[in-house]
Length: 425
Image (cartoon, rainbow, N blue to C red):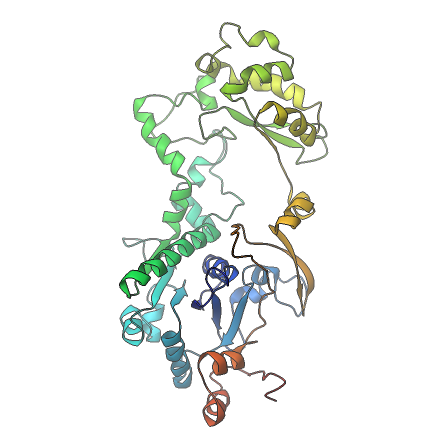
């Protein structure tokens, strides 16, 4: 038994935010039935294609452990199949534009009539309000959620991050909302609506910057580099470069080989509790007790000088040597790992954080595995489905179509070009 065994998810999602959510549920054992347009499927199947004739990595890496059924929702027979799926499933997940499900005849009130226990989970760009009908993509969410305005250096423009906090981050939030609603349904017997807005998700992940916005009312943010540099603060939380967001001064520093390796850097935190160890490591023992250096408040206006000295030391070591030296001394450091290094990391392979998957069209490829580990619900990452691969299986096993009724649905064309299992053929 896996954690979500027996839970059926009707997956109306596409691109990234919704598929992230439903893939996570599938990893935990839910039966995720991905509904796709006949002959077309999820738009990402053919986006950024690197192997001709095969589904893209964009699609495969977001749709593991799912089953695919093709349904034309505008066809009467297609609506019949969808209605039966709604009746059989526990959760419907969608990230359509606002109003799309209502136009299909499967809005919230329609779903409640068909199955009062169903949970309807939605990803939207913005929550209710003046922007609720606007289209939102990853970088728009980062900008509207407060991330971009607080990312980058003070003398540069706002920046988006390479981490997909708008799409995948919101998908993770939605997954939590779904399992919470399922838990509540066990007590009430009723389904409910679950909404995760991308702007809200990004803001939740940027909460320390909202914290700093309020702290500005009490004076300058002393732990920001600009305080020590004598640069006045404005009315809004500023961009802080690579400063640590937790009050302990930290920066990204060059390591040995930085001239030719763009990732030969380390993140180094001068944590107050290990200040004396830092001084010993970088060859500045006199700073341990020196006036102006001995206590954290005294050091705030000297961070540039301090980190310049630390960097002079880190430049003599590789980023991994810095780790080897500092970790036993409890000095918080971390290497800047490239995606190549992450892909080749044997430890991440062993834990299932990075997995190799075999696909019938594209062969072997790397993907992320489940980032959450449960001791009693082991995750096996299975390849993403081919378009409509499980249509016949779902019609028969989930919906109970058989004999003449099965033939009628298949011949209607509403479920695409059905590939029958060998036994059925």
